[in-house]
Length: 216
Image 1 (spheres, rainbow, N blue to C red):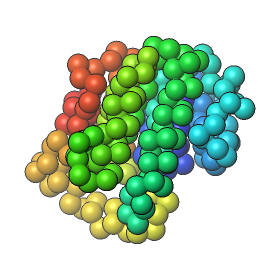
Image 2 (tube, rainbow, N blue to C red):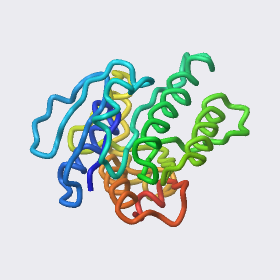
Image 3 (cartoon, rainbow, N blue to C red):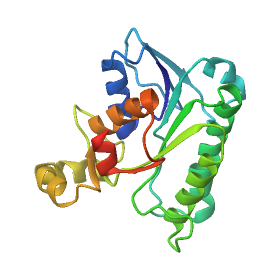
Image 4 (cartoon, one colour):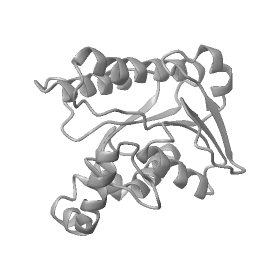
C-alpha cells in the first residue's frame, strides 16, 4: 500500500514513519509537512509545504495513495479556543476534504486523544470531538485513534523541551503504567503498526482507544 504521513517530524509522526518504512506492506511513503525529516529511504518522498490548510499547490502530488496517517497536533495549553480550533479542526478538515476529493474511500487515521467528546465543557475535548465527527461524515474510511499516554521508542522525540524531559522521567514507569491503565497507554511503535493494520484490513470500530490500538 501507498501512504501519506502528515506531521512526520513530531514525536508520534517519527514513530509512525519508522514503522511505515520498516513494513513490507507499505511500498511508498509520502511525508507532507512544514519541514522535512531529512531521512533518506528508497520508499520515502517528502513535500515541504508551509500552509497545510491550503494544499491546492501540491494536490496533484497526493493522488494515488491508499491511506493518510494524520499525526499533526498541538497542546491546548495556553491557547484560546479560536487559535486551537484553527490548528486542530480547520487544518485537519482542510487536509481531509482535499483527500476525500482526490481519493474518496481511502483510509484516514486521525490521532485524537483520550477524553475527546464533542459535548464536553472542556475546550480541547470538545474541539477534538467536533473534528472527529466531521471526519466521520466525509467519504473516507476514517478512524479515530485515542491513545492517551504514548511512550516514544527508537529515538522518537518531542520538539517541546518540557515534554522531552517528562518522557525521560516517565520511561522507567512505562511497564507499570501499561499494566495499570491498558486502555490509556501505548507506544509510538504500536500506534504506527496499528495504523498500517487499519489501512490494510480496517477495524471493528471507528473510534479506538489504546487497548484497541495495541490489539491491532
